Every structure is written in structure tokens, then in C-alpha cells.
Image (cartoon, rainbow, N blue to C red; front, top):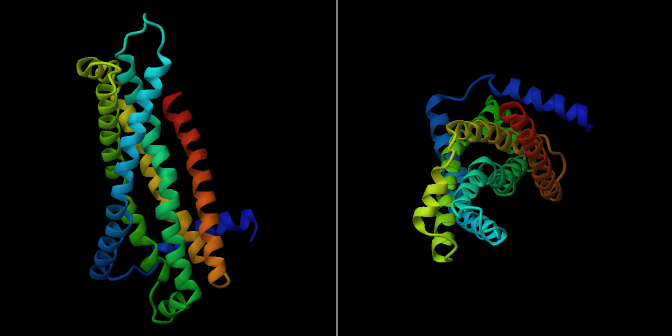
Length: 245
């Protein structure tokens, strides 16, 4: 399958996704199940990474501020800007491409290999709507997870700054409030929402349209991770250019 054919098939998948909707009661059960698997089970790793990334940003900024004329509160400002604008929305999304994306591709790909998708079609169920649609709805909760990541990242930065003795608590809080632009939060959530759609659909596409056996499921997961990461990074550039330039 060449690139143009794949892109065309990807958009056809969107069209077919809404044909013959699954029963509401069944859909509700599937969505709750996907929220648990994709969101709740990923919360631990997101919290862990966010805390230490916030701490590392603070230490690196503090160690590079050698000029005594620059106020120490700049460390709090730099930590806030780095975490809200880039590290939480983009860095965490690339990590989630590996965790959530690989799970989606391998679970749908395994169903394709074991002919469970064919069985759904034979029973008159729209397999795309049954398998992919609940994942997209579940991923719409992803911005909430990034909100938690931002909070934990800034908390990690605060702990590293105060316990490490780089600046006082009041200096960090002063920097945290300095030149705050509320639109930066909106920008971060807009791109997180777009990343959520990418995280749900590209891995689903690679799993649903894969061909072959068990070995190809592993290859499809790797390809899915690479392409999801590439699209997230390119989208990040485009969104930043459109919203912040």
C-alpha cells in the first residue's frame, strides 16, 4: 500500500466510522471500557514522567543561570512556560503514542488476524464503529490527563527548586505568576485535543487494515508508533505556527 492510497483509506475509514451505529447501551459499555484501559491505566506513568520532567527543567534552568543580574524567579517562569507550552502536551503525547497507540494497533490487529473482525461483519455489525468509535470518544478525555500532567509537572519543578536550594518558595511562586498569558493554556488544550484524535485514529487504522499473521501485528505496532509520533510532531509545528506566531 503506497502513501497516497494509505491517506485515502484513512479518510475513508472516517466516513465508514459513522455508518450503521452500534446500539447506544452497547456503545456506552464499550466507551467506559476504553476510558478505563486507555486513560485510567495510563495515569500512573503520566504522573511519574511529568513530576520528574518538571524537576529536571528546574535543575537545568537553575544551573544555566550563572548571571547574578538575572532574577532567580525566572526559573519558575521558565518551568511554567516549558511545561504548559511543550512538555505536557507534546512530550507526553509522543510517550502515549508508544503506550496507548501500540495497544490500540495490537488489539485491533489481533482481532483482524483471528478473523474476529470478519465475524462482526458477518453478524451485521459495523466493525469500525464498534471498535474504533469508542476509542475516539475515550480519547476525548485526554486533555483532562494533560491538565493533571501540567499540575504535577509544575509541582515537581517547585519541589526540585525548593528542596535543591536553587531559590525560595516565594521566588518560585513569583516567577510562576510572572507575565502569565491565559491563551497559552487554551493553545495547549487545542493541540492536545488534536493529538487525542491522532492518537486514537492512526493506530486504529494500522491495526484495522493490517494483513498477515502474528508477526505482522508487531510490525504494524512499530509502524503505527513511528507514524503517530511523526504526525504529532508535524501537527505541533503547524498548530504553533497558526496560533502563536
